[in-house]
Length: 295
Image (cartoon, rainbow, N blue to C red; front, side):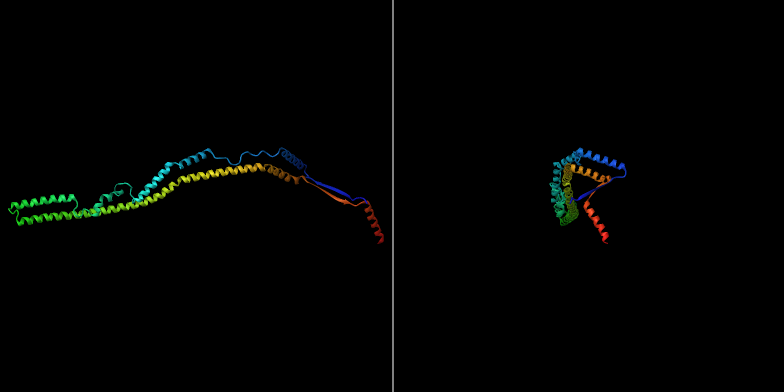
């Protein structure tokens, strides 16, 4: 028995328009040329452009200003003055009377130190007035020949006593008025000290915010510098990836072009089927003929 024969049938289909075939051949020729040239050289720069001179100069100027020792000295002096002011009841430390000028000047009057006739000027004036009044009484009595008499003594006592009582009463009332005025003034001065203390507390808060200005400036510049460094690092990584993956990306683009053009060029299919030997074909024919007679 001989071996089994095979029959191979090949079918091809192509574009009906011959211009499509020409265009496709040009595309394939261009791909072949591009493949022979190899991938393009990678771009030597990443997307990071760096920091401009103006920005760099502004960072430098800001850092220098933020670190200026004169600023810190001024802020520290302000803190010290305000703390001393509050510790001194709202008045300037080191000033005469502790800064309480009115209370220092009018304190004796407010305490009533002059209510009991302790004013030396008043006593001197009253003494001269009494001397003058006594001299007048003596002169009048002497002219009437009654000097040294009981009437003389009584008139002298009445005149001098009335003058002294009237003067001292007036002095007392006047000193009481001055005392009330001094107390009112001292109260106002102390109230001003309280207001000064609250004002100093508010200024401390403002000064605290001022003292944080350098840190805010440095923080902003530092954040910008960190962002710049991060951008530089990301750019370097991207550039590295592009260089490493450039060949694969290039092959992918060529493959994409080829894959998109392939369906347009048509297809070719091959089919192989076994064939029946001649002796089996004859045997089959004989059997078929015999079958017809048998029927």
